[in-house]
Amino acid sequence: MEAHLIEMLGMLLRWLHVVAGIAWVGSSFYFVWLDDSLDPPPPDSEEARKGVSGELWAVHGGGFYNPQKYAVAPARLPDKLHWFKWEAYTTWLSGTALLVIVYWMRAQAMMVDPTVASLTSAQAVGIGIASMIGSWIVYDLLCRSPLGRHDGLIALIVFGLLTLLAWELSRTLGGRAAYIHVGTSIGTIMAANVFFVIIPGQKRMVAAMRAGRKPNPADGARGKQRSVHNNYFTLPVVFIMISNHYAATYSHPYAWAVLALISAAGVLMRHFFNRRHKGAFSVHYLVAAAVLLGVVVLWTAPHIQPLPPVTGPVTLDRVRSIVGQRCVTCHSQAPTFPGIAQPPAGVVLQTADGIVQNAQRIYQQVVVTRIMPLGNASKMTDEERAVIAAWVTSGAPAR
Image (cartoon, rainbow, N blue to C red; front, side, top):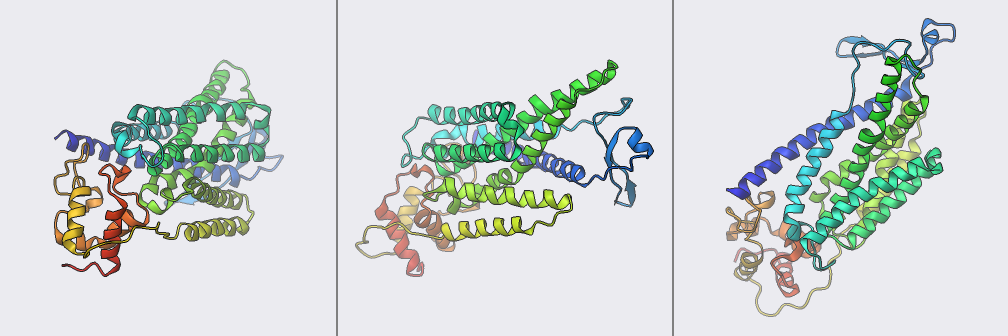
């Protein structure tokens, strides 16, 4: 019952995380589009005299809209002011709670891979926490340094440091855990940008206006910079959110480099759209992104590690014995592996029919990527993998 409640809590948190993430990413995309699409009003217009730096007209849902942006702030603070912060906070809080339930509470199975590094659960979780906090501290210091005044340079440095983080995590944690902790590190940077920089700056601007003072334009400029950074982080983070479904990426010998290529492609796609909003049709950014993704497809193509020769007949009964010993603790109607209440991905391998029906999936996860058993907790041997490989390549006969 306890495992079931934990799984249901994980489901609800994941749902909340996705919904909040959609709201946050949606507002990020919208406001960057809005900023890039504004046209300055005529110099002698009423809008220009009010301090409006840009405006646009839009039609949506049967209505017309006329958003305006002030160079610093309007002459009078309106009575009703909308803030955009809870989307970010809810996404980070729900994502971190999900991280705790799925990974940290089951660190030995979900984070530790003995073939990568021999860690205790506490050490693995400590590495995860340090990656999240340390990433924000380093990023924030860089943005506040003189380097922060050079957008292109700071972007390259941050990308390089995040790639270095992916490399280091891939040397200490299992593949899925390494990827997800790069994602949570980026997500922490994004949420901290909102909590520590963007919202406090906006509060200072509002407080200045209420006190009859002119707001400091530096607060607006700093908030805009961090907001744009968050915009470029979104597509890499979204990929990492779904990456656990694609073992060919995180199980690759150079998984950190695969992630760097995919993330670079996401940044280039985002940059294409940001430039497109400004009226520049820079299709070469999309072409470059497509090339990087093409490299990923080719580089992650199956490459089966050498397996020992198989002795004796390869039958379904022999495969079923291996699967029953190494896989059924999770892949059964009533899993006995701690913390697992339902068979992962709905794959049940208790019966001969279940094994035959999932033969190709077993081959992919056990022989090609070797990501299963997870963390090799059940200690499947290369000889056993060789038997499964021989059975599947011979047509997975049901006998």
